[in-house]
Length: 587
Image 1 (spheres, rainbow, N blue to C red):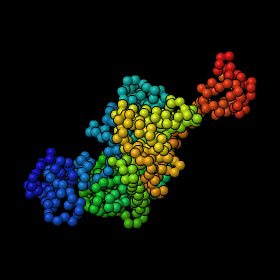
Image 2: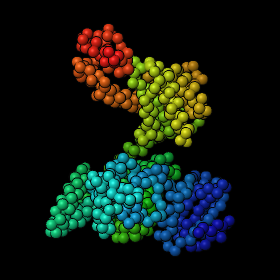
Image 3: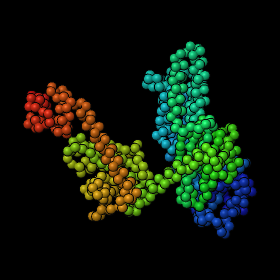
Image 4: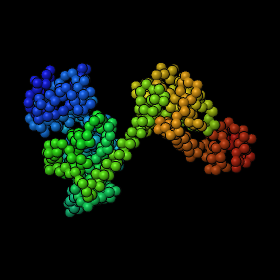
């Protein structure tokens, strides 16, 4: 429990953590020290070498502290409080709450889940991971490999057990002890300790074979082969079996990007990158130190070696803390040559590339805000397009970009009912359906809407938003011919420089909406071609069917056609045209 003080002289000369707050009681900085009194008093001197500290103290209003028994406890508490409060003036992991974790639940027969929230429920967590797609694939592979239960309630054998994807503990088909062995192997697998998993499984396979349980032995053999396949797909290998984390960063005055290579049993099994906030006027060494504390404060595997780009302060304290987590010795190494140095350079190069990409994205969004006079940076942009052929099989698409990257889980596609050809009517239907549903389901509003087209399409978008009382959402049209940007209440278009990152982003969103719409349109037409009533008419084969659909657009138009109209189709003769006419007119 924290204690509040009004005067730094009232602080005890003991080890602990101090919490600085502003006038609104917001936490602005968290630190630790072996002497709270001496450390905090240093902030109250007349001059500060650091501009960041000077600005922070201009906002300082109140102070709290927590005493700990050891400096190691203070380090752990500091890292956890920074993660909880995300103070403005601490160097901290940026947006780490959005990263997924793998969770092994604490149940009689545990499940494997993907979550973005960590709770104190006794579950075992791995992460965070920055590549959500990779995490989903890994969890899917592990579930099928070890046949772990996936159901929330164990209320009888389900489909998974019938298709041999679950050992069905609900039906007593596996004991608690045997199930625990599977969970232990999964735990090792997520640590990247593949050889240990194979060793355990190999022993189980031989025991099963010895007991003439040949079916079980065959299952274990297949598991071992699958893990061997995973090991072979790791693309960089070294001449040792040591588990290591390689940590390096790229730094400038406003941004830092950290990259972690996970080396397990001599192979690079993963790469994660993280942005750091609050790095202004902070040395690379201090940024690296802050990153390590917060990175390993999360539940994750700690390897025997951690290879760093720079020497860090409090190295011994951090080593002791990590060794406690690992329950074995952890070495921290700063190499100057050899393979480990090459790995650090490779990680730093990756960090440089990622940081520059992030800066380009940030600059593109800032430019959009400036050029379009938007009220805020457009972090969430939705783009729309329609696709049809002469008004037939009309579809619409909505794509979502968050922080200039596609968010495919938020993409939407629509089968439009507006009769064509009426591109404006189709856009009206598309936007109306999208934003009526958004209001019903109370989803977050986008920061910017982009429609493919010029003044006409933009006018429709403005009318739809106004009718739904959503006219506070900025909307633009991007005309493809000259890449002109149209905004409401302006007769003349905005013309961005041809090499503008903001223009490239808008083009990318517009083109992605177009691609998504066209892809959906093709799928629909393909299904119409795969089977239709035309297949039931004698004399209409695959070629004639395709030619009929190409000529008329859809079945409904063919039904309404006269014999002479049907005769205009490529490859058609009068006899078959008459059969088609008779079929649809019940003659």
